[in-house]
Amino acid sequence: MRLDAHQHFWHFDPVEYDWILEDQSVLRRDFLPNDLLHDASKQGVSGSIAVQARQSIAETKWLLELAQNNSIIKGVVGWIDLCSPNLKDQLNEYSNNSSLKGFRHVLQGEQDRNFMLRKEFIRGLKIIQEAGYCYDLLVYAFQLPEVLRLVEEVPELPMVVDHIAKPNIATGKGFSTWQQHISDLAKYPNIYCKISGMVTEADHNNWCQTDFDRYMETVFAAFGPERVMFGSDWPVCLLASDYEGVINILEQHVKLHYPMNLQDIFGLNARRFYQV
Image (tube, rainbow, N blue to C red; front, side):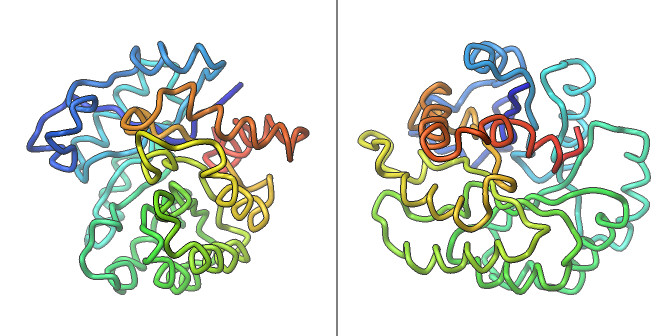
């Protein structure tokens, strides 16, 4: 089974999804499981991990409802207030819901680079670890020094870096620094990496396959094919590519360099990480 390890759903609302800008008209509509099925099934993808797109308990519960009623959704990465003193009580509400696999906070949106290092936040990560959940890291490349400090605090929590930490692919600026940080991060065996979101960090209208080669080479050299997973970042990817285009970027690279690991990267690694 091909598994897409990273995609989103929403009923579009300009207030709730204020990160979707007015000139991003392709995203300013509803995206629901049947829409994903239409695009993904053509590429042999029969399962997905639905990831939060706004920071609310209401969305987490809605995604879990979608998972209950749509077999393409194999797991949900929701949001919860990790800094809440009542976090354990909130987690108890989900204890019988097997679709909930982990959590994510939009760390890339925090103005305080040390937000993730707050004692309340780290306490929250330790609590979700004890409860058997994993964690998605949504950060920009410049936040990786803080991420490296964070993982030292929770060395047993399964974590995955979303979108290869969003390096500036369009300009290539900061590549060597990003490369070093990715290599350092991969030394922790509990950390995985999603090759996802690359097209939206490239020139939306003029990217080509070779723009991504050195980024994929870096990720595979650091994490190995056993800790890398494919994610489409659909529908956000539609800003720069259709679903087929996003798959082809990674598939061409894997078939050339890691043909024996094609099933791992396009499904088995994500199934192991998210326990689906």
